[in-house]
Amino acid sequence: MTSGLELREVDAAADDGVRNSQPEGIGRVAALDGLVCWNNLGRNVVFADRAFRPRAIFGTTLFPDEDEPSQYDLDVHSILEMPELGLVLVLNHLGAVRGFRHRDILERANGRAIEPSILWWFLADVERTVTVAGRLVGSAPRSDGGIGLLVSSSLEHLPDRASIPTRLEALAFGEVTALAAVPSDDGPLIAIGGVAKVALLPLIDDEVGRPRWEADLGFRVAALAWHRGVLWAAGPDCVETVDDYDWERLGGGGYAALDPTNGATVMGGPLPTDVAWGSGGVAVAPFGDLLVVAGRTGCLHLIDPRQDAWLRSTSSLAGASLGIAHTAVVGDQVLCGFNRGGYRLHSFTQSAWESDS
Image: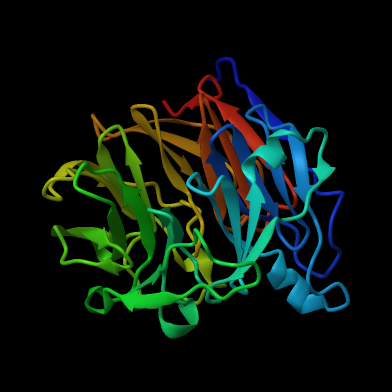
């Protein structure tokens, strides 16, 4: 039974920008302070208000005459806030970090073109990155197996066009597959996910200390989020090493809400079999007291972790897989796109659910 279904397709603003042979899809979606941002793969980066109306669009490349490099240049791996510097950072596959002034974005309207105020160089092929205490903290490059953490020096006085100094830390943890910053009165903390485990590490300047705790989980951690005082982890079933382009082999898995003091599981359970996992994607996110889960064909599942109950689902958007999901929760809405679903964004509200009974 369907009641008050509210599904809206959002204009992804993909008409302006670079042209190359990149398959059309959404690369990343991020909800920031007063902004919602997304990457039209190979095409542009859109900075919009919380009603999803574009304010500014970045749509140029360092490689205007080269097809493949221009694809990588606009293959965004992270869109992050750095309030200490008043910047929104956009990190791409090549390791370029473009800094856009938050106030410059807010002063624009109607999708006006914008260029970065600063350009730095990080390492290439870094799938997961967070900002902590004026630094970048990222997973090691996928090309090197993703082993350990990259911790940068402070970016405060780094000049334009500089390479960002980094240290390789936490090698003993192994492959890092997810990251989250965790607030603390004792100093900055970083949650790192890997194959069937999560650890909580203190950040001391540009080094990490001994883990506060390490928790064993029954899935490969692909998403970490700090929400309402607990650390949420989710990911697919543990399988043998999967190539970044073989995302269809990833499915199912589970979720857990972890106590930040000791890593104990407060709530947890299994996930549907059709979750749209893949490198860099965010297919599961906290949504109020619930979890929202994106499926391969564009349906969204709603789970109540307090009862370990699968409540209801939306109808599918397609008859076949749309690839890797990229989701962000914006108030009472979920914004979702897929890396092989075209330049299309979909907004779901809490009333946009179909009972599975």
